[in-house]
Image (cartoon, rainbow, N blue to C red; front, top):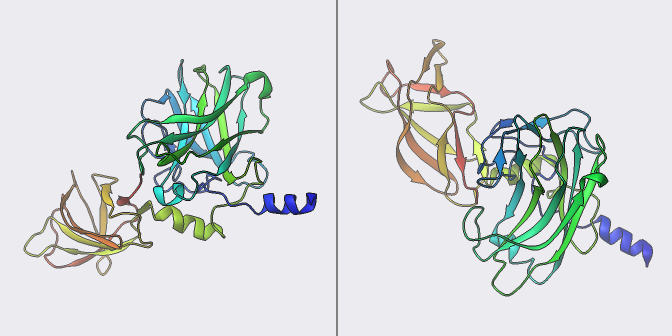
Length: 318
């Protein structure tokens, strides 16, 4: 029976995408609260101050190649972290017990009184900032139990209510108090599995490639792609992007730069926009999007060009 239980625990699914902090499509350095950072992970509004969050590969936890590093850049700093699950996942969790585990490492300067982890609920479905989040179950680990420069696993277990109060569920990590400038907190291997025992870490998807494809259901950036100059103009491109992965909902396009670069491959002539915007969205579906990209000059009407990688993203997040 003991062997069967061990096998069952080892095979349990991870309900968190990008739990290993492998994917950073939006960039690798962030200092603004209320935004997504590493794919599917975000700092709630008002819950990041004087901290820069970066992708790091310096001495990762066993089995990982990268992790999230929160570096304090001023006094009274903190950077809480969460991942919210969509309703199609949450609906199958109601009435069941789950354990959230995550591995952290602090430096010797980190001086919060402790770190807390929690499983939280929200009566509003499919949201990260809407409604009201409240804790189903939380565990606080005091600083004395977090040896400096040592990876430590934190965990909490909760039963998800089936009474209409948990249409949204998220996992949450928070500083108990603010910390001094120079404090560092590394975070790795977030896992949410069914049962009352933390299972060994595994990806949510069968392979690393399929994990990325699952993340792209929520957010993806354009590849290096062909675009056409809008008819009867020398200042705008018509952009039609067929998504790599069908998205969760019809996404919103987000311009990552106001000076996007394009190139005519035959002549090698480059054109950079100035004050570029997305002016008109022609259609938005789960599979593609079409819009005008403004701010260029000297284009040839109906001419073809190649738009550089990562000029815009499409966002279908919660």
